[in-house]
Length: 143
Image (tube, rainbow, N blue to C red):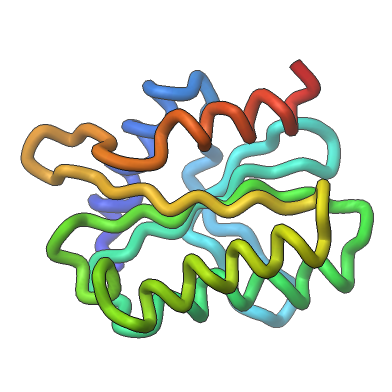
């Protein structure tokens, strides 16, 4: 993963949602790390995964599940950002990631929301998924 892409996507989402990212990875307690994160409230986070070369983007959704099960006090909004030319954007594994996100939402109810974002790299604008992400952030911030 290109740190440049992670940084620019985090800056774009911050600009569009008024949520500031830490600029650091978040350790999922042995299940991996997420690319960046923002604290939305005590024990509530916005996790960011930026997919530029991942051929198995579903694993970036799946690794959050055991973390949430081990930490029942934690709530997470997961933003998984793709570029139209990302290998996992339109693949079966990318669709599996969206399915897993929806399944995890129904399993842990009010503690998890999944958002698939499509970002135009040339104009650095979010083409898909921004409004629902804003709604989840607002909900998780208690507004």
